[in-house]
Amino acid sequence: MLWPLARRRHLAPDQAQRLADVRQKNPESETWLALVEAALAESQDATTWDAVVSAPMDSRPARAPLLHRAEVGVHRRSASRFVRRLAGLAGLDGGGAAHRLDALDLLEAAIRQDDARIDALATGDPSTLRVVAQVAAVPLLRACARTIGSEVAAGGAWWEGYCPLCGAWPTLAEFRGLERKRWLRCGRCGIGWEVPWLRCPFCAETSHENLGYLAPEDGETTRKVEVCDTCKGYVKAEPTVSELPWWGVLLDDVATVALDIAALDRGYHRPDRPGYALELKVVEV
Ligand SMILES: [Zn+2]
Ligand SMILES: [Zn+2]
Image (spheres, rainbow, N blue to C red):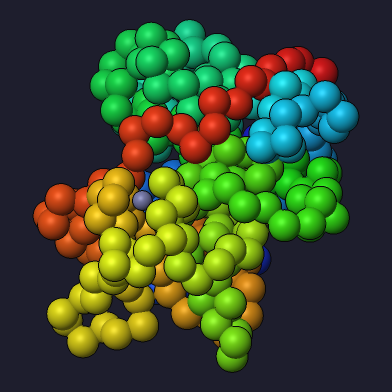
């Protein structure tokens, strides 16, 4: 009889069901979904990832996300194991390259959205390592959201287009509830923040003449793409009955790749630069 060497982590039933649904409809995104599935399962494990966050609440510039200049502690063994697992799922473990990756370095570069630094760590395909790095950061950023995320809500209105916790651009604009209030959602830490209806997250354009929508032609009418003709930025949008769970934001991002393609085809893009150039250290605890 074989005994499992490590405890298997399982998804919650609602996560598993949504994942199966997205998987069935998006077979071309299987590698990405496998990474997301691993991140969802890993994020269940609060004991491994419960982040020790020391964030300088007082000395932050007014428009800086909560994690700016923070130090986040992780367990090196858990982080290394998880990064190796993701690298394996993405097909990056040839020649033992994944074993030589410094997981803490990779997590720090990912959270800071420092693509040049991620590329420098790559021994194989840098674009694959960028995807691995972004997914690898999810359990840690979720832990940060659990630890200090409530201060986002307590802090009152957030007017910036980037995430008030981690500085990433929003993955999704959610039109929530009967009132259709517009919430931007971060696809890394899962935080949401309410914003005015007419305002580009990337360049703060507010003129309706320069803001618009792309709607899919295939009969799917609920999801759209918000576009800005001033900066050519776009963000996917959907109505929701109530707040999407954080993992729903990740899965809906995969489920709506067709909208990304439609936006890119029409000359819109996601900004290359990070929402906020976060200074942050990932340290061993
Ligand atoms: Zn975030
Ligand atoms: Zn814009």
